[in-house]
Image (cartoon, rainbow, N blue to C red; front, side, top):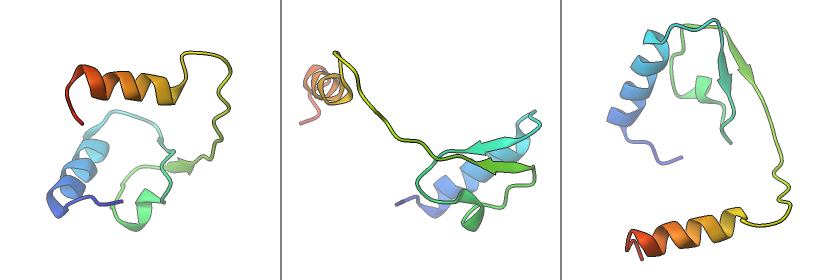
Length: 70
């Protein structure tokens, strides 16, 4: 996913320091393969079906334009 070593350490620390009963992993990759999570985990999968406007493409395009990112 392109995480740096420092980002992975920060993510691991944030997850393990959180007050939660379970960590829901909804990323394209299984985080438990790259981060040592010391809490129960559940991996979920999803599909996005956009209905109507605004849609994700429009929102992202406007965000990029507004913040002069392109």
